[in-house]
Image 1 (tube, rainbow, N blue to C red):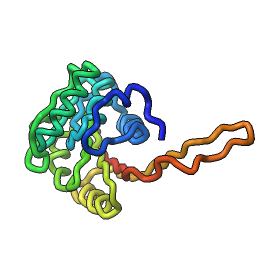
Image 2: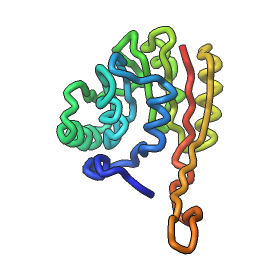
Image 3: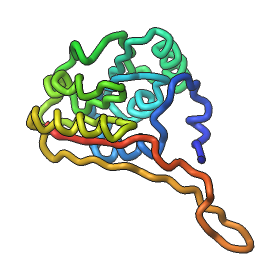
Image 4: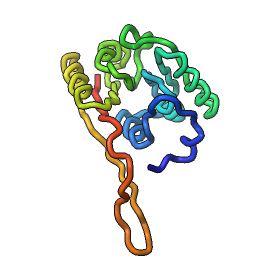
Length: 186
């Protein structure tokens, strides 16, 4: 698996959202220089700092001090002054309102959807980063119940290619499954 140089510099503690998924999240939700984004389940902060490179402001929530500490290091490393790291449980409350995007990367993401819906502006997007099909199922059913529209779920598969003198073919290694991405629009 190829990791871009600027990601190799970031500190890594818990599992991270990889560049292949970060790119899809940014593209499908139309994150831009005017976007206000919430990232919940900060972990190592790879998603948060990636959003901060593009968005006007990013607020990232985590319940664990040790993860916030790693994310603080990565925030300083990339000079992401527009990134605010908060200790908090988004299944209980999201303080912000009128945000463009809420990314949920937590084991119980479906339990945060009601608060994500309240935080989003009309036309804003929620994204679930969901490693298991059971999580995807619960997430989509909850989005439907809350009346999110344009619900769309995908899985991205990445295969490295071997380019050699004797021929070009897919590598026998690569990133197959990382997570399912599920999108919904308010």
